[in-house]
Image 1 (cartoon, rainbow, N blue to C red):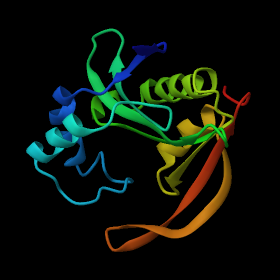
Image 2 (image 1 turned 180 degrees about the horizontal axis):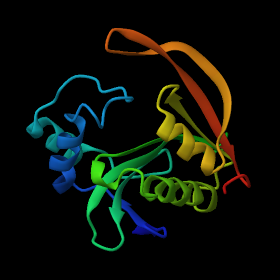
Image 3 (image 1 turned 45 degrees about the vertical axis):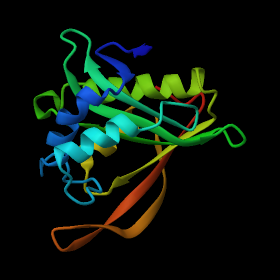
Image 4 (image 1 turned 180 degrees about the vertical axis):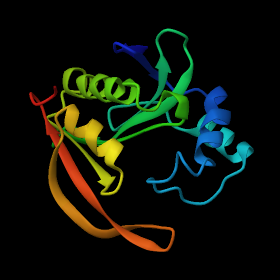
Length: 175
């Protein structure tokens, strides 16, 4: 199963994607504005990918693939979804830096949100973004997300605390 956008195709992540995920998670530029946790070995990431439960309503993880060449360039995840509330949280990143600033993240956002609203019957999708991550904040606003609040000093990088915005997109607001 896959979900087709204009520039990207979203598909289930495979254990064979572990090397790319490991590489992205060890790239300081890619991880600049993300919670990066602790370094993991490639073996551990591969094991995690093999043991990860299959996608279901509560947690859907997609690889972001370029339509024209099938290159895996990132991932996107809708998680914490509950049918009772119709809400889910969204995480996304592009690990292949040569695809930054070219519309792939915007298309992936639109595609996964469309999937969430149409297939999962969600009412709202939420996310957080570090206030200084201007490129991501711009993409989120472009597809219709609105700032709903500010979480003060909840992200630490390079010895400095940063605020995060919490953002939301309601069904019918996707642009």
